Length: 122
Image 1 (cartoon, rainbow, N blue to C red):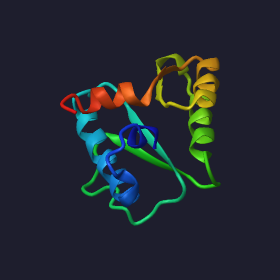
Image 2: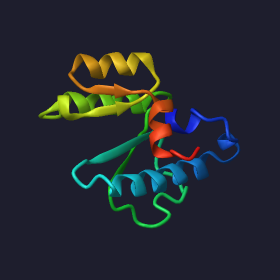
Image 3: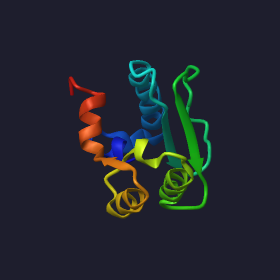
Image 4: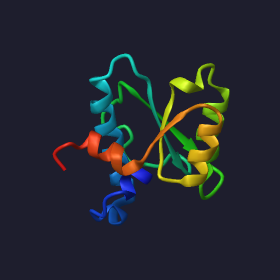
């Protein structure tokens, strides 16, 4: 949600649609990086939001039930459990999550910076 929220384009009027669009856009972006695994985690439980609008080929979509910021815990756990956390980059603008994953060896990229790479034309 940090990536979605990094641009005030009205996403809040259609949160589910914004989530589905990001998943599809991230899948297309990941196709140009065949050696990289890409995952995204949303707070909440799976909804009827059209993920995937078409089958995602490169992105693992995860859900984190359990309330606000539950995705942060799932992401931190994935980093902690990874055999090579130094090979991971976590995209977040949340300072606490960034500190947690850096402490385990992962790199962090801010949501705005990542969004600029994902959508180079704006």
